[in-house]
Image (cartoon, rainbow, N blue to C red; front, side, top):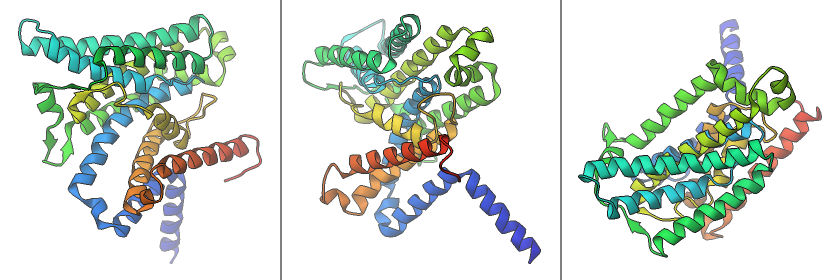
Length: 331
């Protein structure tokens, strides 16, 4: 009996430490039992694909939020990345198709990093509000993408990149998801084990303390936004391959979902607190909630119910986090 009590206590402690994982599993189990179609190959594959690029976006957003900032331009940057990749593959010819593909990918990533770099420079060097800077950048980037496509999506031709990213390991797991999970593991290591990663926490916790310790705050901020831009570009490549096209609004609204996922995962909007793994769980929870609205028939009531649910959860999470920070709420 004593061993059983110890085991139960350990399970409770483990569940308390991994609340988001437990919530994810419970939601997944509920959806599976409520509607067996939830476990269909088509649905699971769709969830894995969307999780792959949403994970990249939330990693980048976590970098920015940890510094006490926000980046509303990640969705627009990903949308522009889809357009530039598709446009390059259709209109540029450099030596051969392989060189053209490589050049297009590099060009996409350079532009994406440049967008993040500009955001970072305005925030770090001119001390402008991140919300205003990145909102303005969203309009600029979307305008550039719309100008390129002229109202029509650009089809993405068949390329080795397409074949590689659409490949499924064991005929089940998309290569895009494997790449995203590898990136997640890499950046978790960066945040938890490297001094470089801890700098983002330090700047978000107290810029004064960071300054006194001799840290280059501007460098850290510029890095955060540049990394967010880079990962948005990679996510855009994934989205273009998934949609087989380049379209400015391909990632429309994704910035809000990534912010919601990060906050649900416990990444504090004021900066300095949060774990990347929990932000990833936030992505999974949002993906399951999205499907929950469809498979329970709630989508028939209103096509906008998904957004209402996500918004309500986000406000509640912020509310309870506020209570905890003020000492009025105890777990």
